Length: 404
Image: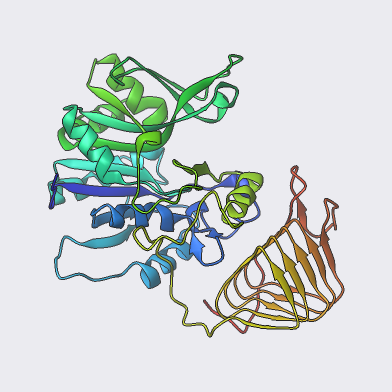
């Protein structure tokens, strides 16, 4: 199906990401670097563009400057049509009666409902900007239209014991939604459908339900309030099974429906490690479904006298007389002689000085790790954060020779 200018996308990117502390001390969760050269939000935005959806507003709120700069330098791909854009929308506080921060995900859309009125789309795609996944959104939109749905939400199967982390969706044989419970406690076994936090609304339905919700005492959240309210009124809600979604050129060894909520240090580290191996669970080498990243115009990678195994290393990095295994190094990272780095993530423009030993650690951007320092190994060094999973995290540094 062809949609032309029928779809407006709103990407919600304002979350605090408190469980990703200290990576979110100075940035919002969607702006956290990932995979050596990306930000988490690049997955949601790339899915939109690859699916032919070119009218995109990114709704920001907390600690948004890092994300705003990333959108400015990476996603300002001006087209020949005025309705092709990726634009950041900070809190406008347009509603006189609503002062301060957004009260919830639904309120962030409601307070910017003028964007929907101005664009006049048939459909509004409301997607989160803080998950790692690839999705052909055209297939979900086709499904929405075929079912003559008013709202379609994407779902993915998870183990029932994980229900407390998700909105859980019950459906009938036709995948019409019959029940939605936000983060229930469950002792049952087997699989249940979890909401991915991605929605397609008919525009009239969206405007009507947001205006009704704004007059209520609620948390003004899509999962907690909007979806249950629509179910109460017997609206036509369908669940789109993400396991049936396919992108082109998917390799046989990849997960057929990879999706990860990288909301904790452990899940974030796991998702990065999923990029490694001869047959990675998520292979980013797909020319038919690119994940777009910023171009920092770095020189090529330089390696001398080093052992590098099963690792991704960004352009502009330098490794001299070092050992790097099962790790991801960002752009411009320098690793001096005698260093050993294993099972770790070293972000852009960090410098690891001579004879350092780093194991199962995440080192944020712009850090200088002094000579002969040992980081990780499941032990607390006092000045660094030790996650309950045993992963050590070094917060963002303050190198003065880089300003990216």
